[in-house]
Image 1 (tube, rainbow, N blue to C red):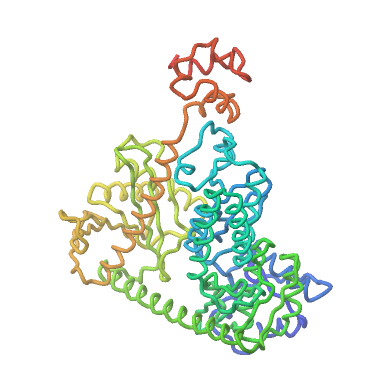
Image 2 (cartoon, rainbow, N blue to C red):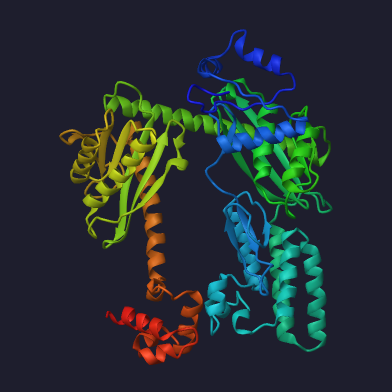
Length: 590
């Protein structure tokens, strides 16, 4: 269904097209559906050969076009994985977040980053696989700190042979697919063999590995010691225009954790639990890589009429059979009840939070004497360390809370170091010029973390860009910087507003301000850390990673490279006379 601008409003499938379309254009409809129908200008139809093809096409179009009136599941976070780079001779074991498409073995997705980092902490202490990336690994000439902490066996400098390292890699793989007991048994055999060979240091090391693995076994929630099937159990709750899907992940009888997803759609009111689950299953599993931790069974609290077609469609994504079951007994029935109770609780909590935010927005609208209730707040903050690595942030709140997909960071380019006013002005200009050029939503309230000086710069930008209907408010910390003592300045004329410490409007402003500060300082720290590890050699044209590595290896460090003559630099393999002169000039300011 398309509007007058040929923008897709809704994508759907139907076995009986006539009946499906009649449902939109006949009979009484709720306001949301009526609003959709009023915008329809054209309907395009694609005929497929089977129900499975229709499911796949519907999913691909929804993912690509993101129509306003389709159910979309978003949580503003990518999935965390454990990545083992098995394509390398000495594989790296590390945390990975994002789309799992590169080379290597991906284990996950895990429900939370904490569960991933806890597993990695154990594995690095136990099996001591390398954590560094390949460029760092190849440039090492002596063991790093991780070796001293006994969290790496230093394969970069040959302190462990490939065969022994491969055995540790295999143990890690077995652990990650849930075969912890088999790993422990193998380690027991190796410990006995080392002890009989009087290699007591190796036996002690293996003993510590076994103790660590047994400790993590005790910490895991175990449902069934004999379970071997990988399961995902879904719960779904739906009240009015709100819905939640809770996913509980069980692998080899152990619970990895759980996670909630809240769908977005203007037509969620007309959906039922079956439609919500169908959309969730296709969207969730289509973006996961096929691997050891994908489920072989999915349990649902309601029966899906086209479960077999969905299973066939999932096979296109997972490259393996995935069963969708509803009628189950025993442990599976109890797990379903647990997931359903979690979904109900999460939705209730979400609705209470939304109601609180709406109440706060109404209170803030009354304080600022707005004609309409504020629906969108954008807050800006600036962070730096003595003028270095200056970052400005923009966070967005609406009537559902933080809208993280609209968050933005700005690397300050033109403002002088330490000039917070100019940095704020630059960020505001860049942001609102983009908003106007792309026709994006303008905030009802522009919140500035700062006092009268920052407020005047924000007023200046809004006046230059002719932004109308935007309230501008500055929030400055009081002399003691204690919460509740903030000073509020409303444009124009920087009118000061006083609010009690327990005022709902102030609580919302504090929350938005704190989120902007967190987002800004996080970006600043990343930028500062990047600059601290940046080498001046990286800025010299023609000096790539291999040549930098060779220069540092030949001279022992950057200071020695700076002291070298042109002839000495040209003697390094891969460095020509012209490049040696360029390096010398760059390092000596010529």
